[in-house]
Image 1 (cartoon, rainbow, N blue to C red):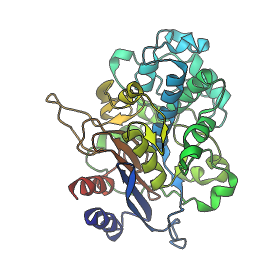
Image 2: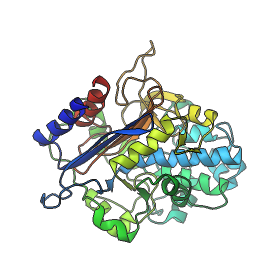
Image 3: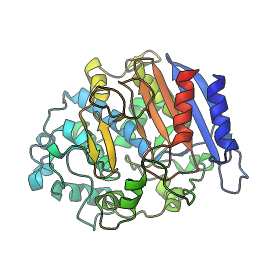
Image 4: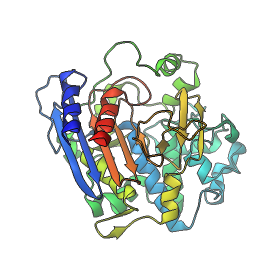
Amino acid sequence: MSGVRQAFEKNFADVVEVGAALGIFRGGREVVSLCGGFCDSARSVPWNDETLVLIWSATKGVAAACTLHAMQAAGADLNTIVADFWPEFAQAGKGALTLGQVLSHRAGLCALEDLSANILDRESVVRAIEKQTPLLPVEAGPAYGPRVFGFVLDEILRRLAGGESLAAYWRRVFAEPLGIDLWIGLPENQNARVATILPPPAGPPAAGDELFLRAFTDPNSLTRRAFASPPGLSGISAMNAPQVRAAPLPSMGGIASAQALAKFYAMLASGGCMEGKVFYKKQTLEWMSTRLTQGFDPVLQREMSFSAGFMMDPLDGNSRKIRSLLGPSLSAFGHAGAGGSLGFADPEQGVGFGYVMNQMESGALPHERCISLVRSFYED
């Protein structure tokens, strides 16, 4: 794996990293484990194998996997009507929405109009979701929900799993049995291990990010509304506060190591099995690796494709990848996080990939520093 190491070290030489880590599993075995740099802007605390860092929306992949597991246990499928087990959800024209539509960002719930809901007050957000009219029809295609999505999945899981929160479900079902060092709601005694997340440096947008960044700076755009809804946390520095790290935010609050993210996806890439434990049925795994929608996403301002809760690379009319963020496999699925983190599963080759960092970059999806790591792994 010399090519992967060279690509990883080049990112530091090119000064696009402060601290970062990369973990890759193949066939259930860890084949890459790299880390380097520093946990802070002063470059005084070295990054090591025990370092954790915020992974932003890469948390959504974990949240989706938990929700799908709870669906599997409850006998629900992608055609199950959400309001059948969450009656209050039926308000404002949402009575026919299915789990598949919600999981693939087609429910029109990318932003909330009730500005009294606060991201750190779960009940207020759930009530606002129940009252919210879909902003777009299902047939419009994907409209990504940066913050709202995690609250919807958390409430769905609670309704299916007897009231247990998504964060607790993750710890009980996956993290503790498999020793996966990923938290949705960080215990206070783990804070010393967490790297400080740093805002993107100033500069021109990367190729492909122009539309997104223009929309993000427009206070009236759907993009800006979606990324600020529900309100209550503004500014990247707020995410470094211990009380915010402790908040179980399934859309954007996950804190993990690269090895943890890679191990989680390695389990999904290995038939839903790991260490003698079977977590998923074949049908559930197919929901993860099957494109349910593709189109121009008005929130992310680019062509997007989603399975049941996961990002997939979009395809052209000849079933070829428009971009290869997740490697060459057509069935690869995963989730990116704001600033550049990425986790994905490649079931064709049994690969689980996890990349985390603390120096954020601007834009909606990871740039070349992460893409070069993916590319070099598959070329090695």
